[in-house]
Image (cartoon, rainbow, N blue to C red; front, side, top):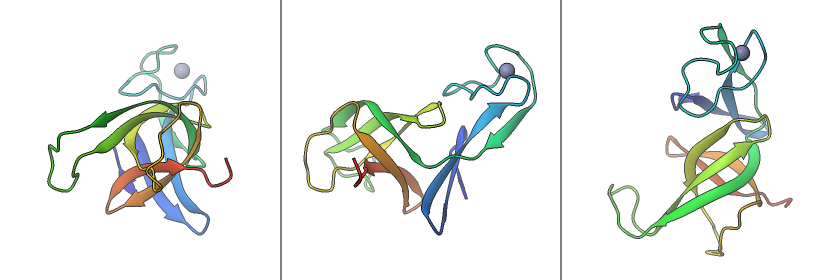
Length: 122
Ligand SMILES: [Zn+2]
């Protein structure tokens, strides 16, 4: 499993799974970057299982490279997981098509990075 601070991703036989932090008191997923439950405050947190699937909510395309391992252009997205939380991750469009907010995406681990791609099943 790779730890990305607010989510943990790993692979199993069905593909990439993305676990997220959830408040044990109210069950709500923690928002991106939160360290406490917005509803309950300092409650116990637990890792909740996730499918690794979600919806693209927004993205930005960088035309300048800040890392030799990420040559420009590349896209960074906000994805809302099916389990509720939103997160930042790279977005790859294999056919170089245009990303579209609302499109279904699937997680994968690529060289230790969490990446989302368009879901083949739409
Ligand atoms: Zn809570």
